Structures are given as C-alpha cells and as structure tokens.
Image (spheres, rainbow, N blue to C red):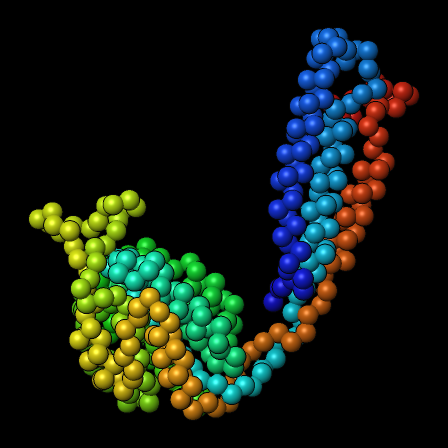
Length: 339
C-alpha cells in the first residue's frame, strides 16, 4: 500500500509549469537581446565559450531536482504490515441509478449530481462501517466492493457518469440482487441497501428482489430522486433535450409509487430527495437505528519511509548541475560533447 505522509506538498508541483514558462521566456528574451547587436551566427564565432546546450542541460537537471524534492517533502511511504482490525459498525451497499433520466434537472444541479453529493456527505459520517457501491441502468455492476476505505468510495463516486452502463433502462431488481450477494457472508452485523433512483423504465421484479432481501434480514431503503411532475433530459449540452420517435421532448417523472412499493417490500425507508438535506438526514437516522456489531477489515498498520532513494537522486542531479559550467573550458573547446 502506497501513500504520502504529507500530500499537501504535492500542490507545489503546480509551480513546475511556471518555472518552465519563465525559463523559456528568459531564453527568448536573451536571443532577442543578442539580435540587437548583430547576426547571431556571426556573434556566435565571437563567443566560442558560450554553450546554449550546457545551459539547457543545467536547467533540466535543476528542474528535475526541484520536482523530486517536492516528492521527497511529500514523504512517500509503503505499507509494510497488513493486519486485521476489528470495529463495531454496519454494512451498507449503495445502488445508484445512472440511467440517462438521472440527468434531468428537477433537482439541482441534476438528479445524478445531487445523488453523488448526498452520498459523499453520507460517507463523511461513516467511521467504523463498511460501504460498497453498485451502479445500474439496464444492467447492474459493482463499482466498489464492500470496504471500509471511504477515500476510495468518494473517489469512485466522483467518476460516475451515465456512460458507465451501456444498456439503458432501470433494472432495480438486478441491482438489489447484486447488492444482496455483495455483503460479507460471515459478518453478523446489520446490513442495509440504499437504492437511489427515479424509478423510471422499471424492467424486472424489483419488489420480489426486495422481499428476498428481507428474508436475509437486509433492509432496502429507497431515495426517490426527482419530482413527480418531471423534467426534460438534457443531451449534448445547451438547450438540447431527449426526444421520442415522434419528435416530442421526453419528460422524465419520478415514479414515486413504484419506489414506495419497493421500500415497503424491503421493510425499509422511502424518502424523496429535494434541494434540501432532508433525505440525507433521514438516511443518517435510519443507519443509526441499525444494530452495530464487530466488523473485520484489512488495513496497513505500519508504513516505511521511502524518500531516501529520491533524496540520493536529488543530490546526484544537484552535483551534476554544479559540475557542468555554463561556458566551455578553453582547453576542451573543440570537444562537442553537448552539440
């Protein structure tokens, strides 16, 4: 397992392009200044010791040393010991609808982005729980196996788009069945499914899947994303909207009745998301009601510092930069080492 002890120092990498631009600007300015005195090719014969290649090499050596020093300051570390940690919590599988209808903007900024924002804030409240992520449209896929690595969970959330699932639709039953199979069989903690969808294009027996989940003591909570009056589905940016075969703009509506029936069959909560945080608070309260028990997770508990090799490279680059002179030595003037 690799990490940086002080990752905030990596922001200094943004200074490297500025250093490069400044150097290029100084080279161009120097060439313009030389042109004021005459033909550069003629002046070159009058300055035989001057070597632009040496100056470029010295810059790149120094540039590389600065870049490596930033990584040294960030403190690269490798996990050296994997051990089992026991915590008290619950297991949560999140099923997120990524069908095209989730791009409708009846909640701000749109249904999918609102879902991702809500899940990100929900994850921030986890401490000892395990969480997994499934994305679905016409089919369902595991995006993140159940884990206590919340950083990875938030990272995967940020990259979710409707293009992740090529088959369009809303196969809620497939998502629930996959979530049931994704829990840790050996864990005795309470397990719950949080399913976020607009309920449109229902294709399979979601109610039957929710009932099977309850038989395994797994609650199915539904967050209805959108408004019953609906909204058009933007495509390609601008004011373009999805249309049907007759050329009419498609209005995507929240199928609230379907969502409520699935939640009832899954012995869980139904809540409709809006532009407030009421849905988030309802989910947090529902999770707090669950019985927490001992969970096991694998974590790297010891990290070894790995900056030494980079530090030696930095030292070698700086020594090389110091040893290379800007001008050619008169004794070795005829040696075209850097030409």
